[in-house]
Picture 1 (cartoon, each protein chain N blue to C red):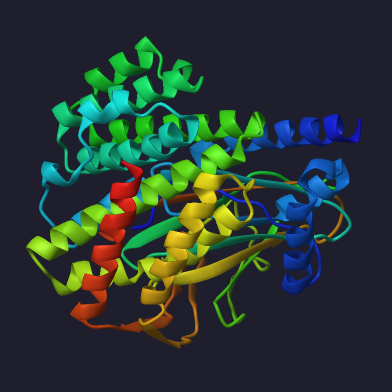
Picture 2: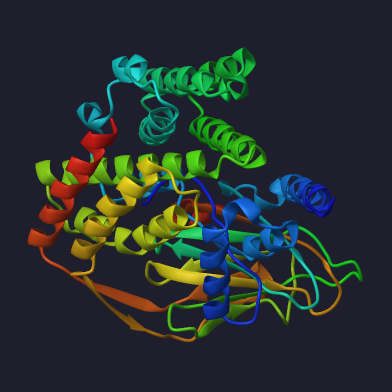
Length: 132
Length: 289
């Protein structure tokens, strides 16, 4: 029963992420829906390599059951925070990196529970300069 | 560059160590895993750069297209077992991304059909509908559309396999694709060495860790166990590449929703290391195709 419930919640989460795809445009999706159910201040984490020759877009696709936006933080391989959207939980943030390296994206709701769904898109730096 | 399109598991919790411990124990008791535990282990995700991303970065180095490095489509009928098929969907997927990015549209269509043929053998061919193939044909001069169709198709493949709890096949596709992209880069570098391409190859040091995590957290099947051994050997060579890192304060441009994270990483390596990576990558790739 619990398993069905988990599957049901994840299916809902998938739908949220899928519906969120337009937020990435004109970036190419990296092909993944990052989604997870967060309960009681739990934290979701994604390990990701960001390349310095690309610009990335991170789009947040959902809110908690009490209407809070997802807090997204990015940490470098030494555990030092290099980004946080706490001061501006916009629907998306674009990210440029000075060097290729592995980072950890951390996502949590400040209160409440819910599906955390994130999408990551990318485009070349040249193309980004053209559109901005 | 890097490869495969997808994700991996993880855990909830307060510290990374705790999470890793939970995941390890859950691997050992996979059959009896509870729904609650299953929910917990999905909270850390390891992500591998997509084949398309890999090909875009390859093109940015100035590397020229060479179709002799791709896996021959005539070999498609020789893949009979499910693991072989999954691995080579990854391989052909990387080749497809390579042709798309370099705008080799005739070849791209050939590789798209090949992926569909292999997909049919393991029940995912339905994703590549005649309408989708037609769309692919009709958009031959629109690179963005081709990339989007390719990415969406592979996202659908992985979603189907995940729903059917076939994470081992997802992992095999990831490894197949990652190795193929690395192989192509290495072969081009061997024929025409450049600093930019060598750096791109060296940067795979970061992705390889995630590829190994994907394997580690996937169901234990003999093919993945063998690849884990091969890739661990490859990692030993990559470990000879030293990375020095310096932190710089991030610049936020709120009016553009843009963050410029100016950290610097310098990789220290020589051509001998790249040659060793190339040689072992070729050996692993040839054991797959």
